Image (tube, rainbow, N blue to C red; front, side, top):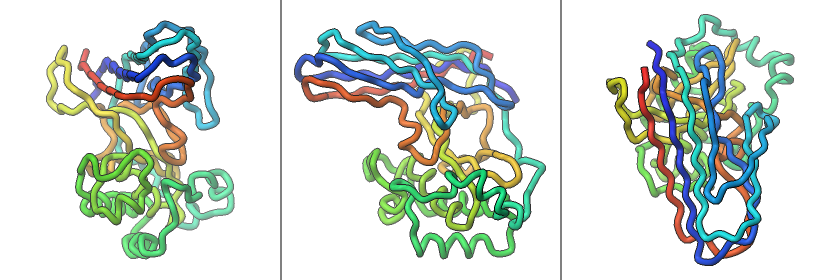
Length: 280
């Protein structure tokens, strides 16, 4: 199945005093690959500014923009149209010797490292080794993803944007960012190269053409078991036509949708909306 989707991601900030200047980076442009085709993308800001584009180390398109006009509000609107399709499990299932070979470890070393968001943890590593027993690397990815899905309860407000995989595991709750980080921590502990994916999820599987729904900023994982492929541990489902991917990295810190620094009044409100329309 293929879908054509329009995504409108709006972020609004309000400040308690004028902001004199700000420097910003937006990672909000969907990418193209063999599953997804970006047709058009546009970034607009209020106040208006001129953005310049570059591709960062992880292959993500970045729109960078500076504001030097005093302002008390800032709105960033990223609009795109993409064609998406499903992603079946890859036919290649590398052996453990191949996944852990010196060549693979050297090539994907950065996706085997532990980070602040994805820390090393003895007990989680023990669970991962148990789930790996008798399974191929690909089967292990599915087993660990299901364990994370069944272990965590989806709950907003328990964790925050700076929470680690361990924080979510100890709380027993979290959001998609936490599901992804916890899955990555366990996969890396058994030597499977794994990376964080940010994007969007269309929330209505049977949406009619022309229908607009409230979408979700979403996160999932990709792993290398002979080739790269993705899986959504939050929902325990394969990546399909409702997933729109934007960026990949070691963890959330590498793919933050909008970040920057500014001089002026403190932010008093942040509003984020994602509207998704099925066009075909």
